[in-house]
Picture 1 (cartoon, one colour):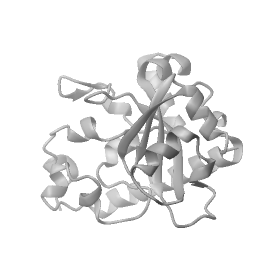
Picture 2: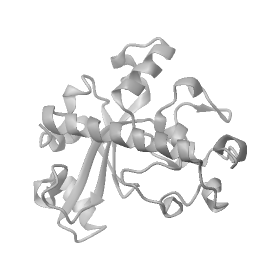
Picture 3: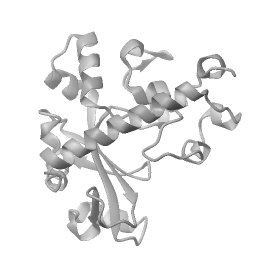
Picture 4: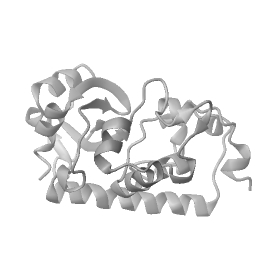
Length: 211
C-alpha cells in the first residue's frame, strides 16, 4: 500500500483552506524552534478560534443552548440553522489569511514541529468517520480515493484521544488553565465555515461557561 507521502501532490490546499488548531504541547515545540516565549508566539502567530457544530445531545458537557451564547454569536448561527443546541469548541489556531502563516514559497517553515493535524491531514476528525471526502472536498488525496495504511489511522486515533483530554481539561479548569496568553482577535466557525470575527473579550465571555 502506498504511503501518504508518496502520493500527496503537495497542492497546499490544506495549508490554505484548513483551520489549523493547536494543542499546548504543540505550541511549545514551535515556540522552541522559533526561540520565542509563549506570549510572543501567540501574539505573532495565533488567532482565537471557536468551532460550533450542531448537536442533538443536550447533556454533553460541551453542548450549549443557543440562549446561553452571546447575542453576536446567536444571530450569526440563526442565519445558518434553527437548531437550539451546539457543540462548542474553543481553541487557538495558527493565523491564516489566504494561507497558513507558516507557508512560505510553497514550503512549511516549521515542518519538523508542525501540529499533528498537519501530519495526519486529511484523515483526522473530532469523530470517527470514514466520509472524509465530504469534510475536505478540496484534498487531492481524497479525490483519488486514497486510503491510508493501518498504522497511520492508529496515530490519528491517538491524536483524537489527546484532543478529547485537552477539552476535558478546558471544561474542568477553564480555558486559561491551558493558555495563559490569548491573541487579541480570532474567528468563529460553523461546521468549518467561518461565520464571524470576534475580539478577545467576546471570546472570553463565551468561554466563561467552560470553567
